[in-house]
Image (cartoon, rainbow, N blue to C red):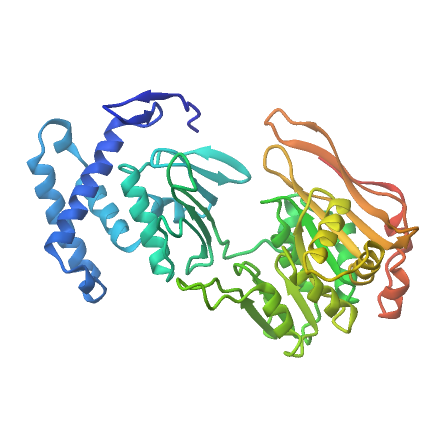
Length: 448
């Protein structure tokens, strides 16, 4: 893993990080030259109809001619690699293509043409991937968003969209990004972790799973809270396996990330406004429309604004068992954010009324976090018992306590049961679900 991020000047008006190999930059510049020659020699509008093998042979020939015309080290360029990467420029994401083919990479973070980070197994690493220059990076960004039917320029310098494979891409260019273009790609994991995988990697323990599975089956609404990259969507996705197969689920997301393994499912995704500023479809629009689709459950991938009011109305008027995620640092913070979102709707509602409405629809908050070393843990399962004297009454059922950090720099700790018996047990029994009496006894559940 490269860690040297000191900068050194490399040529007039150019600043190159010391971790960048000059020969790698030379290779990228040669690739740009070859691609320009390809553009001049072919009608790129016809590329979609040209046999890929024939095009690759043509590029290989051109690469050989380019290398043969160079002197010194420039003539030692790897012709096969040059051919492969020019094909990646034409059909893929250029220098990023090899990262997108790596199944261990979960995030690709580009902080300019010479600094590309990835996340692997919860840890950030600086890679040796670079672009030829800023213009090269901008061209790749524009190509990505153009294929998605979007645009990015000085008038519209920010884009958030979804790639065909489900990965989420966010790009920002000047004047919004002060130090040059930035690109973030959150990879879409085709094989989402299921409960067995979460148990195996220590994210959750069997006692929590037993309780949450019963909660899902009994149609008790809950929210998964946590920070960015904490694993909220992964956990929600895994818990969806406990929804009875005969129930109709409607999912609503800004960028489709949920992937449920079931047949009775309708997935909906928001749509941004077009270049004329028309045609936007918000999460609130979709939540309202979903009520006309005879759903048994509505699952909002992440509540961010006024759609929370429509979701709470649905949860309080016959669509129990609905689920969502929310960015928050704790269960208390999640409830405060929900209140703020309800107030964003513009309705003149008092805080006590809002709190009663939230407590009636959302019975549990499951909080997850990414700890030091990249490990994800379910930090707590908390029950919202109700509102007492104008304040939420929250009781922790299960929790996780970090104790120290291992020699490898990974957080270590223990799961525990608090000894509190949830008030919702009566509802579970009504639904025909009985949990062991000792499940909630105060004790340590596991340690690392």
